[in-house]
Length: 89
Figure (cartoon, rainbow, N blue to C red):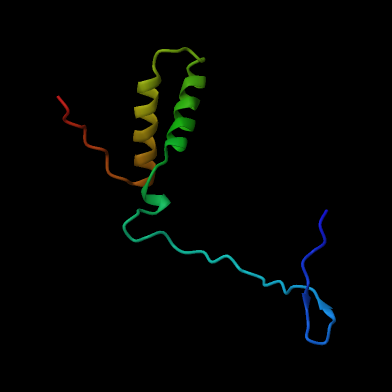
């Protein structure tokens, strides 16, 4: 291991470097981003959809239905608007 750096004073005595305590500042989210109460994360939807999968006995084949049901329920619980269907076709 190397010796910690020290500074020499004018009188020849060594002095340990000064440590400055820096506090982390927390800032609120920018105003253009909705707060977490106004959004639903993919992780939340995944957890709810997985619960539906387990409640169904773990049978495969309904993953999309579970996802949309989970998203719909979470939106209703939080009083959020339903997503309008996309018109890609």
